[in-house]
Image 1 (spheres, rainbow over the protein chains, first blue to last red):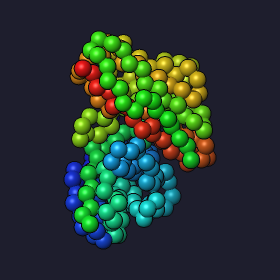
Image 2 (image 1 turned 120 degrees about the vertical axis):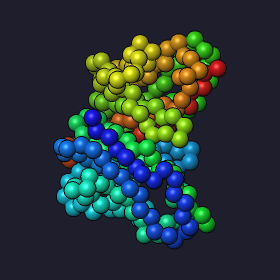
Image 3 (image 1 turned 30 degrees about the vertical axis):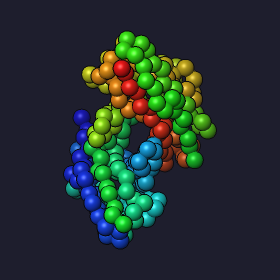
Amino acid sequence: AQSVSQHNHHVILSEAASLELGCNYSYGGTVNLFWYVQYPGQHLQLLLKYFSGDPLVKGIKGFEAEFIKSKFSFNLRKPSVQWSDTAEYFCAAEAGNMLTFGGGTRLMVKP
Amino acid sequence: GAVVSQHPSRVICKSGTSVKIECRSLDFQATTMFWYRQFPKKSLMLMATSNEGSKATYEQGVEKDKFLINHASLTLSTLTVTSAHPEDSSFYICSARDLSGGGSTNYGYTFGSGTRLTVV
């Protein structure tokens, strides 16, 4: 069975700091990868996704992620975070007809 | 963009009663919808996959008779929590796969806003 791991459960940063959230998946076949964000009191929103092609994917709000197949990783990055980025971030991997989520990372950005 | 509407957003019910949660795709058709449960400070756990016109597929450990899923049309799936107990209190989220972006190589999952169920 596939699984997704997010190693950082809680991250606290100051505004303008750089962000990198780790995501590793375990599945030997072809996977599609996603990052979702959940702002307080809101539903999950898609930040970016990777299906194929350029392993560096750019998403909304200045986020990007890099797919490294050899490391089974799909880390999320942002060069300079803002207070409004405070939210919970979920990495997800899709194989077959199933979308599996990581445990989530709660990001708090201090103004 | 694709929108999934989930209703109600909050519900409080008495132990032993049943609660129905609706999930609608508003501007696209969804042959497949997914139901998740999110525990406090935990990730989303897939409960079942809802297939239009056929039986739902349940994940291991999820009671089919307790969590009844009906997907009667291409835009509506319902989850009924039967004989609810306090341990069923949770946040339930539905999702649909939106293929309108270009089929098998460019699609996304759109999520409803969730339903907070409290069983007292």
